[in-house]
Length: 185
Image 1 (cartoon, rainbow, N blue to C red):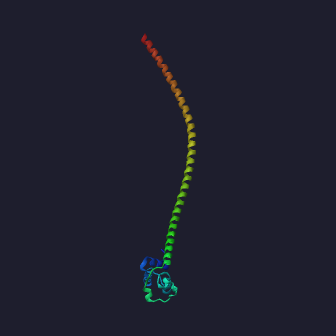
Image 2 (image 1 turned 180 degrees about the horizontal axis):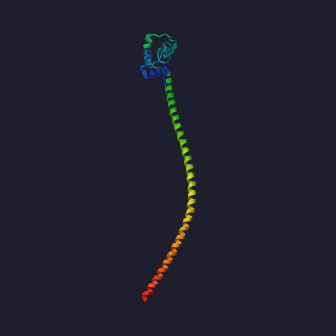
Image 3 (image 1 turned 60 degrees about the vertical axis):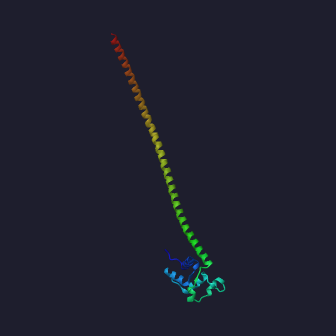
């Protein structure tokens, strides 16, 4: 993870301090925990410009012109000024927007992959379906020819069977007639 910007981190600390405010000394100590190297004079000017204090509240003096750094002024707790609160809130919204954009992009990529897989599966299904249909047609034609041959064979066997049955019936009739003649004698 990348190291946060010193000014964003200072705004976050000031925002989290709420109505109690935070002194320059406390803010510096907390920033040192994040291994920031502070340029005292530059950071003091930034602190004066972004935290409420008497000079800033009445706009009687440009806060940046207060270049004298005294230990007393460093230990007084000031609240984050309204402009700085808005800057920090805008930063949080931008950060959230970036995160949701990344999430939406990830979901869009997944949706595209699913759509591509779906298209490929539909193409495969149609190709396989057409092959099966042509195979079935060929098999049906083949079966129709086989069925015709079988049908003709069955007809022949049926005719032969009928002729045998007729012959048997005739012989039975002759036998019956003979038996009746013998009985009559």
